[in-house]
Amino acid sequence: MKRQLILENGAVFVGEAFGAERVREGEVVFNTGMTGYQEILSDPSYCDQIVTMTYPLIGNYGINRDDFESIIPAVAGLIVKEVTEVPSHWRSESTLHEMLIEKGIPGLAGIDTRRLTKLIREHGTLKGRLCNLETSIKETVQTLKTKEWLTDQVRRVSTTMSYESPGSGPRIVLVDFGMKKGILREVIRLGCDVLVVPFDTTSEEILQLHPDGIVLSNGPGDPKAVPEAIETVRHLIGKVPLFGICLGHQLLALACGANTVKMRFGHRGANHPVKDLQTGQFYMTSQNHGYAVDPESLANTDLEVTHIAINDQSIEGLRHKQHLAYSVQFHPEATPGPEDSSQLFEQFFQDVKQSKKVGVQYA
Ligand SMILES: NC(=O)CC[C@H](N)C(=O)O
Image (tube, protein in one colour):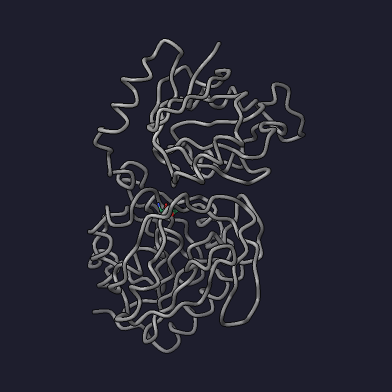
């Protein structure tokens, strides 16, 4: 069966349908990872996005039960050059096609993904619709251009209830804005007593849990679409050690008075080089973001840049000059991608323990 991708600029890509039989719309983005499609598809930060994999063969090691980053993927669609029908891996339990059907995600294969990627690089991220060949191109272009896009992604993917993973170490409150399970896994690995809370938990509610440290997770959409979270973070700075990851990093920046801007086509892949300005070290990092902190907006804030992206010099890490609060735009939890920067979790763990010794002041 054929399926097409119609873009808001009128470009059309016709290929083979796989996965769920559904019409879906979303922002078309590309990821340059050669592997990691299962983690990418289940990363909640891809909510309302159609992901194009630039690596030409996807699905070759199948789908296993361990590598999901969330239970209900929020991604709107998947585009690949070639999808493997018969995967081969000892952990594989189903094919990519079967998983996409089960999770209600449409796929499009057999198109020129290089041409599509170049188009996104030239024009910036474009809105698109995955649909059958009978769908009118003219009407779709009109709809995509004029449609009011929903901005409640974080609300849709965050947990609605708090839950706990008990441990004997420091108590960490992990604010779930659409958290990848990899972040939870890292704090559990360190023996922390973890409480995961919904995105709209207030600062008072968080402080009542007597955290030793707070981790702000990744999440989908524009960070300015969650003003309540910016307010919460503002109230928490200086009270408890804070560590922000991706959306959490952007929220920390906004809470300190900096600004975030939409990037042309973002960073999505598993080999983004980052320089740690404090140590002079370079890490290969896993990334997935379409927004970034505007460097010009830092002038009147108490923030300083700790990491930069080598490819485009954009901000990849920030630190508060007075308080124990820092953040990174990339993903130290990896999954998928290199684990070069996983020591950031250990660093936060040490900082939390140190500040616990000194004594935490609750307001
Ligand atoms: N992975 C993330 O947390 C992404 C943050 C934000 N949604 C962005 O696209 O920039």
